[in-house]
Length: 637
Image (cartoon, rainbow, N blue to C red):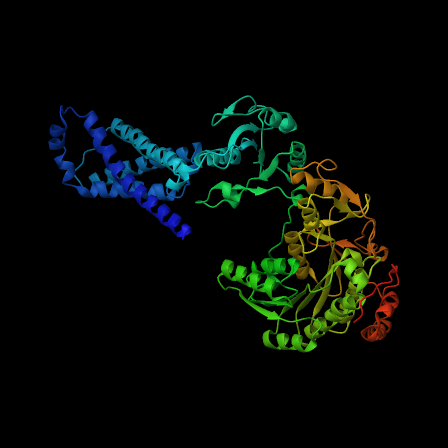
């Protein structure tokens, strides 16, 4: 409802500007002619002006010419609430071009005797141009002032916030943020100081707000101006520099936020609505993922099945796939709530194109898989369904086998039977030299994919291996945040433990890209950047909560859990020999390592009937480099 009101307001604003500009064009002509005439009174002038009133074609043509030029030069598309020098320059250019065009119309019209108007002097046209710039530009400035002061009646009763805000970056976005805070009556904070690394700006003022020093001085300036909140307004600055600035700002203990980029803002939306809290992911040195849309054309007009589609990675895969205009997306999951929410989100964003379907079921259920493949006959399958929690799978190894190994076998077999074009499974860095059941089970799935690829010519099977995904269900950051809300302590297993991390969107984008690069049988390895110390991650989460590690929130070390390693690896030694970069410089591919296929099949048959105490022994047969981490407690079937 609110969006409809805003839309109507902007439509009426455009109509008003069209009408006003048409009147301004004609008024400027009449006013300048009167100023340059010898008439002593307006009445005498109007009498002498009768000849012009008899020829309305001139006014019609000239008015239409100006309005057309204004339209072409986008004077009606600018967001005047944020207007500045650029918009005023547009007005000047539009009026000058319109003046040249109107002069031509007068000359041509007079030559063709369309209207009886003599050639006007250059003084007339110069006067008209100056007057029109003042009238058109002046109205835009008045509109700008009105829109910035526009606050709903109910809002006037609200008291201005006492929150004092530092804006880091005195560029375009910083100025927009300052204007927005002002236009909201300072109810969302009062900007008290700018910080900018440009020494030519330091010591000056923007919108009456002082610019004091560069980023290195943030802690001292924050203390001097009693700052409560810091907003980073530097969306165009490279990611590495933003991380440096954020780490400096974290020392202040102030609340940290980030502004949107100009591309993220809509024409009718306040920048304040897009401001968000700084997250731990903002502190990871992750360069922007650049996708090759041509590689992803394999998804266009295809039927895509995503198993585990309601999970954190599966749901993001569905969102990424939807961008490439598939015919259908099938969300296959055994948990209906997440799948239902995702479908509603996709339907709302894409208006039913692509068509999205939910099918509830488990990859362990061959009959249910048969029904889904028979109903939709998918072209591409992303297999994201899996058990991934290391400690739980240590306690319940049979569940890891049933879901991860045989769930993959069942789904891959149906994909082969139904002639699926591409089948991509999500693997993990824990599959490399595994020390836990979960990692070993995922290494088995990689071998299953390589085996399936050998026995079929119709389906390209491949695996994508990557590390931890920040923000996924059960990941470490939500656990830290919960512990902080309880008052601590935050628990870290070991001070030296490290992990590779990437964000959910980044992981999903690279999986989609790897699917387009697959030729069959490969294990793709994503570039995870540098490993991150979990201890540093915990300290940063505490600081972003406005607290001080070891002072407000303690950190305790609980010791490595069963099956857990101090560090993870992304590739086996044998794979590194043939590892090569793909067309995407963040995706590497390893050549398949030969293994005894008969032994794989025979051991899988044993695993189907194995008791919990035999699972690790059989996994070691398939994955010889699996180093068993013994634990007495096991879940029975």
